[in-house]
Length: 307
Length: 307
Image 1 (cartoon, rainbow over the protein chains, first blue to last red):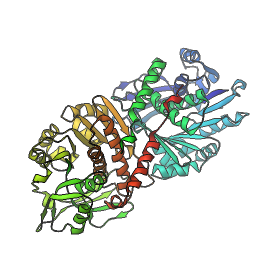
Image 2 (cartoon, chains in turn red, yellow):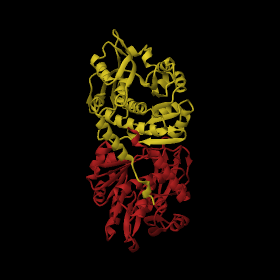
Image 3 (cartoon, each protein chain N blue to C red):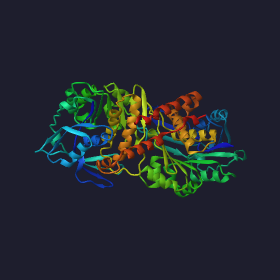
Image 4 (cartoon, rainbow over the protein chains, first blue to last red):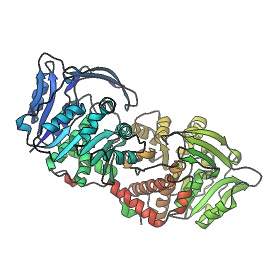
């Protein structure tokens, strides 16, 4: 029984109002693995080029991230993205996208991954996501999918196919609006859940996240931060905390999903404190526990005071 | 011992994507009084022209809103505002502003209001807000002030003076940023609290509200709604629920302020369901209690599930 994570492992060049990273390691599956490995072992599926640093792979292996499903194409280059954040940190411009090894990525699920119980499909082409689902001999207990506007524009048919096969969809507010054609997030949620997913999480960045399920809704706050240093990977880290907590507890009730969203939010609040995965590499179990308590404090109130 | 409310009573002409109101009754103090009177008696300070409908004043009187401090200038016209909301409902254009009686408003605090324990200074010129504070012989237990960008631009010196005399400041996120010159709301809060207020509430519309106090922060969600029909007065209604709950319970602890913010958020969620104060006139105690329970459900999670 295991958590399988699918997604990019890549290089990012990031500019924020606080500074500029050089070419650093990024990619959805990298963030997810660094985050989820705080809670459970991870079986990774991805593709990198010969330029991807050996020591980064070793560091993940030491964290109990299995890399058997990570293809290394020695003579090719890893996926590369360069972007610049605006001063509000909520919007960014893409400066460079070089698909490289991701251009013809054909994921292969190793035999040792067939015990997959929790499947986290990080942001990637819907065709790749679907291919992984179809290679699994047994249906996982829970399939979570992240996607983005880009795939809605270039691969909507494939995206619709994969939506029929998953349990939880993760999108941000603008993506939910684009996917549904509805401005109201409540209406958007209703439409999206008719497309397949039983659970829908709408991420709103600094405004927290909403979980919709069966006519119910849960609102998780984001921790108000003095500075957001680098938002890159915050959504992937959120996903990693969410699925990591569920895989650890093996409890996919709505109640436990609420807790999992708080865990995801807490992990994302670390991610943005430094460039790339740097902060995720540093934090301890104790740091995580303290941050979770901050979330409890942040939203607790006594309704019995309404007399 | 009483709650005194200061603010405009006016006419509004509102256009939203859902329709157009004719000239309807509005104004900060109108919304605050309709809302707060669910929780406690209100002593109102305002000014209207001879055109303000008698029956609207009578309806407030029946709600235990005392109007002794409301000046009626028979030969003048009430304040009038016309605006049009954009399709996102978060932004609006002002089409017409006619100050009329508000132009030279000189508030007079009646002797019967001198038992004021809770003072709600609705959005108005800081000079008028200051005049009311200065007319009170005893310092109220709690002074809450609402203001807006407009006063920061035209009356910053007066605003700074009144900030030194209040306990709780209510602003929205863009106003907090303008007042402090900081983009990060955490940094903005720290700077604003150096200007006087011990408590700061930053309203974020559909994204909820933050309460800052003494290095602590509380995050109240907004209820995700299918449709926001008319956002006019939502902030005033929030203020009315907040101060109404505090005045009713006479408990100004940080804990009870958290509950008061939830009450304010619940009341604001009613306000936006119809044009003007219409929905506020309809709701019962039972409606309010049910809505409050929705807020409890909305944010409750079990952190003990993190094992």
